[in-house]
Amino acid sequence: MLAKKEESRSFRSNQIPAMRRLLVVDSHYSFEAIRERKLEESIVCRDLNGFFDRVWSVHPFASLVTSDKWTNKFGRPEYYSLTPIHTFIEGKVGRFSLLSWFPALNFLISQFNIVCVLVRLIRKERISVIRADEPQYNGLLGWVLSRLCGIPFLLRVGNNHDKDYEATGRISMPMLFKTRRIELLSSKYI
Image (cartoon, one colour):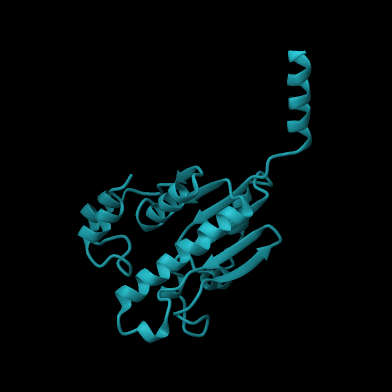
């Protein structure tokens, strides 16, 4: 009887494949830069040749680095479809244009908004794993989303930011982190 139950459970699991869905938090390029430089392949390869059924890539503050002709700096996140299974989401540097005179508060509101949008997306689409492409801001955002939604979190560390700072004296994200101290605080959660 036990063997029969095991066999039927294994048959069911073979019949209905688990949905594998990925959310990537990456701020290397905005969608504008991806289009201009023809880097779409660097995004669509994230499904790992079909391993993931759906992939969402998120730049949490893309309007910080996009041109004025591309999109408004303030507002809600914007969605772009690359393929039927790849969606690119661009966050804004600020949520409200009326708060442009107080950029720090506007940025915090915008990032709170993107967290809420992504939590809803993760739950609605049953995203199964989150990946972030650096341990600083993107890593912190990915970790927060992972904790809020109870799903696995993967962190890709592409270089040693401490060694870079020692060698050059420059921080890795100067437009986002104004000082080295703030940059260090953002990565201490790991």
